Image 1 (tube, one colour):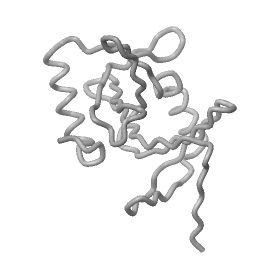
Image 2 (image 1 turned 45 degrees about the vertical axis):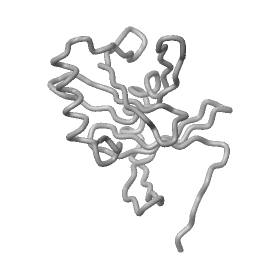
Image 3 (image 1 turned 120 degrees about the vertical axis):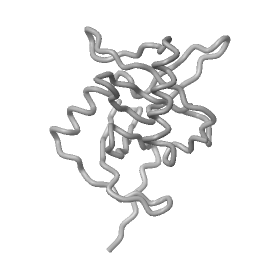
Length: 148
């Protein structure tokens, strides 16, 4: 028996954590978040699997302060959601798409840095690092994130 579940009061956000394709389901009311591994995808249907408590705790601890962000751009503040988190040359990076854009128009990315209260984001100012990260994102995630 194939069942279909929907959570009408929850937001669902698929993203990558390294090579794992994950789904975060979030309820604003109680600040409740659940994490599942995307085991398979057939068009718009995702087959989900529980990733295990230790893995879930580790990922949630890392992403809790960086999953949803707001970025001040000129006169506007835009909201973004995590699309991918990965390491390259012993440095962590986070890729974001605009939260309310459907379909997303652009991706932005930051260097992930550990601070005293968890994790934060740093702007990548070095041109060579920026180009290297952009190339890595394209190689890893182009087909999933619709990069052209």
